[in-house]
Image 1 (tube, rainbow, N blue to C red):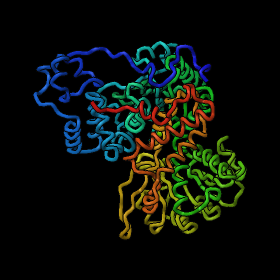
Image 2 (cartoon, helix red, strand yellow; image 1 turned 90 degrees about the horizontal axis):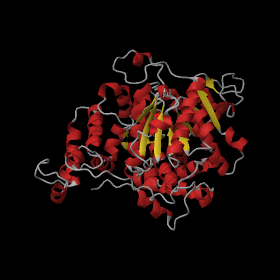
Image 3 (cartoon, helix red, strand yellow; image 1 turned 180 degrees about the horizontal axis):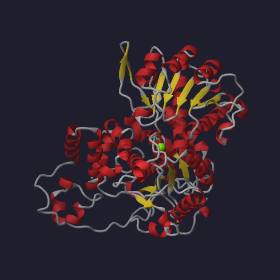
Image 4 (cartoon, protein in one colour; image 1 turned 30 degrees about the vertical axis):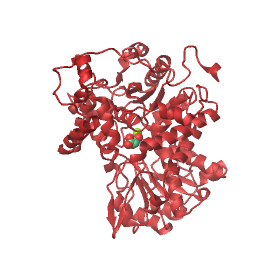
Length: 556
Ligand SMILES: O=C([O-])CC(=O)C(=O)O
Ligand SMILES: [Mg+2]
C-alpha cells in the first residue's frame, strides 16, 4: 500500500500536522483567534507572553467563559443576532467558540446551521463583518494554483465548496452562499473533531442569476450572470486539480450546487479525486439510516420496503440510488430493487412515456395509470414517502391521510431545508396520521404533544453523516469515497438508535451524541477504505484509537 504514496507524503495523519505556528506576543496573541484565550490566560502566560496590563485581573476558566457566552447568547433578541454573536466569538476566540458549540449542540445547531444559516446567507452582504474562507471568481482563471498559496495553511484536509446556485431550498444566492461552507465546516470540527486549521470553506463565485442580488449595491460577489457551459466546467476543473496539487490529501465536499452540475461534478471526480457530494450522497446515507431505524418500529423487512420520493432533484435521486444498493445488499437484484422505488415530481409520477426525464430518473420510471401523487400512493402503497422538493405544503393533508390509509406506521420524511421549506410540519404529520407517522425532517421542529402524547421529531439531516465520513476518510488518507462507505456510514448511524428511542418514535440518535456518532462512522468508513484498498496510510494497530487521537479538543 505504501508504494501508492507519493514521495514526501507522510505516513500518518499526525505527521506533517505540526503546522509551524508563529510565536506571537502581546496584543498579537489577543488578536489571533486561534491563540486567544481572553481572560483565560493564566498568570504565568500573562507574564511570559507580554500580556500583563492587557487583560482584566481575574482569570476565568473556560467553563466560566462558556457560561458567560451562553448568558449573552440567550439574551439576544433573535436568531440572526445569535448567529452574528457566535460568528464574532469565533473571530475572537476559536477554542471558546467550539467549546460552546460542542457543549450546547442542540441549542446552537439551529443557529450555526439550518434554519438560521439560510437566513444568514440571504442577509450575508448586510451582516458581513470579516472575510472568512476562500473566494474564486472567473477572473482567477489560470491563477487558481497561484492564489491558493495565499491561504496561510500548509496542510488543509477538508474543503467544502459551493457555487451558491442552490443554497438549501432557497435557490441561487450567489456569493452569499459562503455561509453554507462555513457552517458545514463548523460542524466538521464540532461533530467530526477536525481541527479548524485543516478546514477551508470555498466559494466558487461564478456570478448569480438572482437579479435582486445583482441590483443590490451591497452585494459582494462577482456581479455578473452565472458562468455556464465549458467555461464554468473548466474553472471547476482548474479548482479541483489546483487543490489536489497543493493539498493532495484533502477531501473536497461539493455542497449546494444545482442538480445538473452536482451530478456532472460527481461523475467527473468521484473516481479520480477524494470527493463527494453532500446533498446527493450525505443526505442519502441519512435517509437510508432513518429508513432502517424506522423499519425496526414497523417490523417490515428491508427487502420488502417500498419508497416513494417527491421531487427528483439531486437529494432524491441520490437517496434512491443508495437505497437501491441497500435493497440489493438485502438480497434483491438491481431490477427488483428499482421496482420498489418510485418518483413523483411537479409534473406527476415518473412514467416511462414522459419525455422530460433525466438519466438519473429514467431508471426508476414506471408504467402506471396513476398520475398525481395521491393516486400514485394509493396504487403503490409505499411504506415511506420522502420529500426533497424545497416546496412547503407538498405533503398535504390528503397525502398524509392516504399514507395513513395504506400503512399502519407511515414513514414520512419531509427533508427540505430550512424549516419553512419542509414538505409538511411535524405537527401536520402527526395530526393527519392520528399520531401514527414515523416522522423526520431535514431542519428542526420543536417537540410537541398530540392527544396527550409527547413526540420528539427526528432531524434527518446530513450533519449526522458528513463529519464522520470526512474524519474517517482523512484519518486513513483515503484515495476516494465509495458508495460502500456511505452504506457503512448509514449502518453505523442506524446502529446507534436505541430501542427506547424507537418506542418514542424517534429514528435518529440524539444530536448530543454527534461526536461519538461521527467516531463510529469514521471507524466504519476507514475500515471500508482498508477493505477496498482505498487507504493510503498503513493500517494502524488500533484504528479507533488512531481516529480518536486526531480529534480536535478545544480545551485550553
Ligand atoms: O445544509 C443542510 O441542512 C442540509 C443540506 O445539505 C441541504 O439542505 O442542502
Ligand atoms: Mg446542502
